[in-house]
Image (cartoon, rainbow, N blue to C red; front, side, top):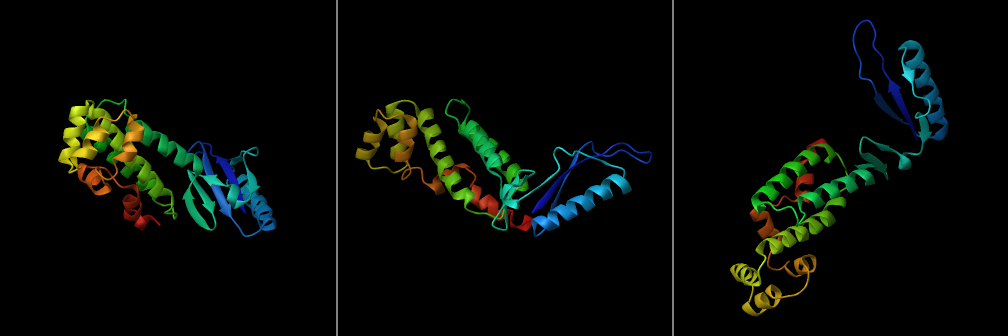
Length: 214
């Protein structure tokens, strides 16, 4: 159980304090949570002369708790669902086919954003969030390349440079399928290794690189 206590600090004679601080206290049982909640509230209000936001202070099961972008599931810290949704939305903007920038700039922006994000959320102990996102992001980058190549002749030429057999290159290059569907067919040509050689960052690898945070 957790007592999620929102503490509003105020200025005292000896210094200034942050206007709002959130505390989470984790205990083993509902009864202990109620007891610790009461003791913590009394200590903060009487000894430290702080004001408690009673509307936001509550006892709840750990499985319902989200704190600073993290959730707690099965005894592990993981990125909250809301934080993952926000992360995916930002990746979607950076890998959007209607953002007309060079691939070098796009990939540089992705690397910068992902590394900054992982430096905070790499605290998550759950690996399973990343492989699926990696697969989705690689497909979006293939889509961006496909849109950038524009003309069938350009697409066929670039596929041939990627060592795609000529019959397949012509078939895909002249396809009437949309960019997203074509991107699914390009996995064998623009492989994971090839995309990473172009500068695409791997989310799973970045998570492993943040092992020191866990």
